[in-house]
Length: 303
View (spheres, rainbow, N blue to C red):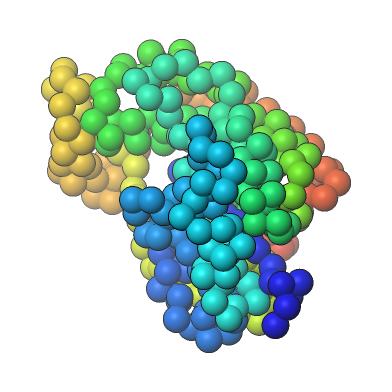
C-alpha cells in the first residue's frame, strides 16, 4: 500500500454540535471500522498527556518544527497502521469554546485555518475537513451552560456582552478553512439536521463502504441545563467547582419537563435566525464546500 492510497478526514467540531455523540458512535465501531480499513482516533486518544495533535506532530506553539518525539511521517504511520483511511475528531484543535476567565470573544476559531495548514504541512498530506454549525442563539446558550458546568459563574447578561451573536460567524470560519493550504474537501452540516442526516455524515467521514459499521448512540451525551438549574447555580453566588452545575442538571433535568435554559428573547432569536439563514445560503454557494442537507421529507431532529 502506498502513501498515495491514504485519505484523511478530520472532524473539527464545532463545539456543542453533538460532537460527543458523533465521537462515541465512532468509538463504539472502532474495531469494525479497522476491519474495513478505517482507523478512528478521537478525544480519548488526543487528550492524554503528550498526545495532542500539535504535540504528536511537532508544531506546538514555541516548539520548532520536528520537535515531536518522532518524525511526523513516522507518527502518521503509527496511527494509520494498515488502514487506507484515517479519521480524526477533536474539536479543541481549532480553539476553545469560551475564552479563559470569561474574557471578550470577538471572533471564534480565528486560528482554525492556520492550525489545519500546520497539520497538513507537518504530515505532508491533504486533510478533508468536517464541520457542524449551529443556530447562533442556541450556540451561545449552550456555550454559557458549558461555562457554568466548568465551574465558572457569570451572569448571562455579562456573558452575552462578552460573547456577542456576531462572534458566531460561520461564513467567516468556513471561508478561512476553504482558503487554508493543505485542506482538501470541506464538508459542513447543520446541527439541527444531525439526526436526520447521520448516515450521510458517516458515509463522508468513514467512506460509503464502511458507513454501515457506525450506528448512532440512542441517547444524547451532554444535555444542556434547564432554566431552573441555571438559576440554582446563579443563586449559589459563588464560582466553586463544576459539581454545583452538574448536580443541578441532575436535580432539575430537561428530560423531566424542566424548561431548557434560554437567555434570549423571541425577537433576538428571530433576528439571529435570519442571519443564520443568510449564512447558510452563502455557505451553500461556496466553491469547494459541500453543505450536507436533508432530503425532501426527512424530519429534523428538533434540536
